[in-house]
Image 1: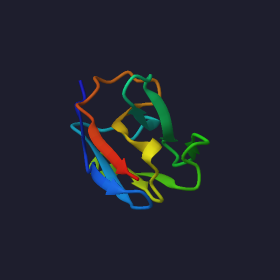
Image 2 (image 1 turned 90 degrees about the vertical axis):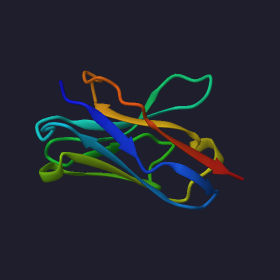
Image 3 (image 1 turned 120 degrees about the vertical axis):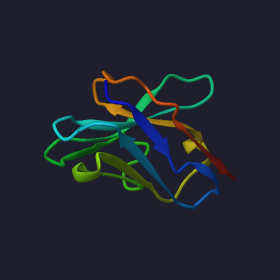
Image 4 (image 1 turned 60 degrees about the horizontal axis):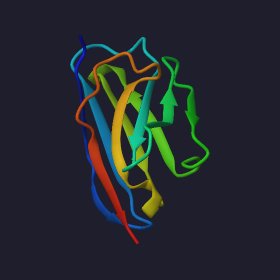
Length: 113
């Protein structure tokens, strides 16, 4: 089973940027991958997805501010987050778009106003 390790989170002021990384222990090149987030008291939501052919999709709440990318040679998926808002505060996870892999620990993103 492929293991996922997310990193790159932290505390940032509103308007700032962060780049998240998701390193997989095995090949994910054939999978459509996604970044999810879960805020306190809320359900986990998919915010960005990238297909095996590098087509991308974004939730309306992050469109124009977040960019998902992947490096199949490194088995890594990235999420560049710009113009961060306090409402982006959440634990961020990666997984396939169907969530079939074991969830990692996630990485905490906190945006202060």
